[in-house]
Length: 139
Image (cartoon, rainbow, N blue to C red):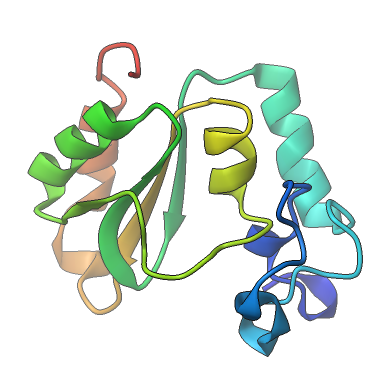
């Protein structure tokens, strides 16, 4: 959650910003205007400056490898490394999300690694992420 109760992962300037039932929930408030939160602006600035070929975002607690855009092969590889299922859909809409903005709308491969809530310390995530960074070109 960002300043002012804004969920940074609902504040990106996507085509679907501010639509859907999730936007009405206090847990997923995207703010009054897309891209208005300083944290969202900072993320967008860093990505714009560095133009990554792959974005990996860490979240919790859905325990899956969520993929957006051209990243299914990478998701499957991470799934094998982590034992978490690869999922292109997490079961609810995510208007204003980073996955929609970069993965679908800008075609930058994007993985949201949804960590298990209670197993973070026992699954060696740093080693998994280092192995992931050795992956071939996204696609």
